Length: 253
Image 1 (spheres, one colour):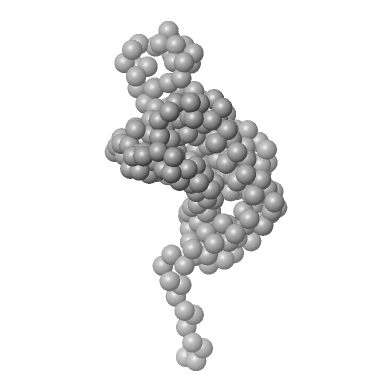
Image 2 (image 1 turned 90 degrees about the horizontal axis):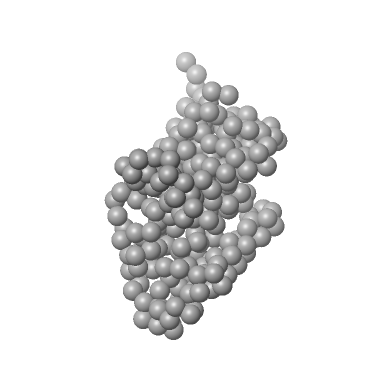
């Protein structure tokens, strides 16, 4: 009988947290992370002021600020998510990662939530905008909070799509372009000319169902202060379906 002590059993979730910390810290090891945060902040504020005319509206509200977030996430979530699996494959570090006492699903969860938190940090640095609106006027704080919640959920949905694109290729560029195009289509659904094209090609009932897949259509209630179950379920379904499908792709490869 061996006198060697038994190996300690890893705590449930320990591997997940280890991967999450590794991946989240990894985003800030290069200057690109800070460029990413600066670009998001600059574009979010610029779009609100120069295109949304938030100042000229004369109303203490951030609805025009959140109006353009689906467009920003359609570009920036794939940019952040492209490295989820593509970079690991390119550098050959995926196999090294999986030599840890960690399953593919634990690694996938850790990587996904690290990326989502990174996107959340980009959203957090726009808080001075909210504080400024509160200082200059008397906005409904609940509406502002729900807008931030909706934007964060929208980012997760775009990240879920980006995760699938990243799992399908070794190239971050291809992963980014694929993820961006998919997210871009979902942003277009329900918008102007695209909406008219749908109306001319499908029956009214079908068009209504397609509109429900649009990112902006699902974010809109949050900008009005409504944290509704249906759009919340939509964003979470897209996010976690993307996470699940990307993990299955990695497992089968």
